[in-house]
Image (cartoon, rainbow over all chains, first blue to last red; front, side, top):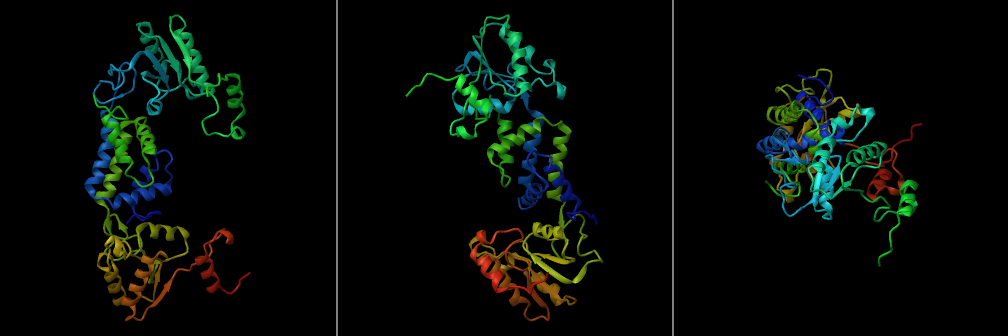
Length: 204
Length: 204
């Protein structure tokens, strides 16, 4: 007999595991574990194996570093995309967010993080050299920086701009401003200030 | 090459699995899947196996039907608990919630659900007969009904009360009323009404 707050070691371990997920507290983890109890055993096995399979089998595109099932790339290998434009992002999630807008049809370059001396992440830990190689190989007209506005994001953008300065390529950054549906009253002054400085011709 | 909104079949399947969890939408599921990508592979395997182990190895106490790792019961086998009182609840989660209060030291009886004709759950699908057997065996002074206040909860409570009527056992139900910290203004009139009818002598 195992004595803990759950009265069961197996339950305690399942809760412990689920609570390691970001945004899942111990209370939610308990709810999830007890939910799995009500599911048929094969479903739970399938649930677990899909996660392990994803983690162990996933590959990365050697060119843009996006996820790949078999070494091929859903973006780089798509001839309908504009291969002369590269959008630089921090993470795989960012690629999916941009894809979700339906507004971008070029290629990507996933840095795999952001320059952050505090976290011990330097330029060499990211795929910045590989980005330089892609641009050096030619055929690229524009590199769009879609990085966060944090100090780290600005540093990374600046570092990349220096690395690409030697090439004849247009460098741009995504627009910053007041979000759609946001109240001016509740927008931070940094954002609001930039949105005024970078105002656009009015189109009705 | 697999084409879907994630650009990867493995990712899509992991997201699909995670999104089956209650309260986890597709957006959260994507975030969780990408988080697992940043974890070392052995950690992800341990995560998955703790869940599968829990589901496949967990047993139930043959007496109170609470979770058990090895057939023994953290509640029934604890001689420090008051074995003359049984608290009847719908689910395993309810037991843990009541334990969490530190206010109850008797035994439990997990019904495994609630009588609900709409969902096709009848008395025979629950452990009501087993509850009757426990009471019939003697040694029980009080049965506390800690069921929800829904129509189904009331029906289940009524059914149990009829089943136990033949035994010399005190039947009680947990108190209903305005919760601690709740504003009277925002308390539903059913609850507020009951809290007035069932008012208690004032203790300062």
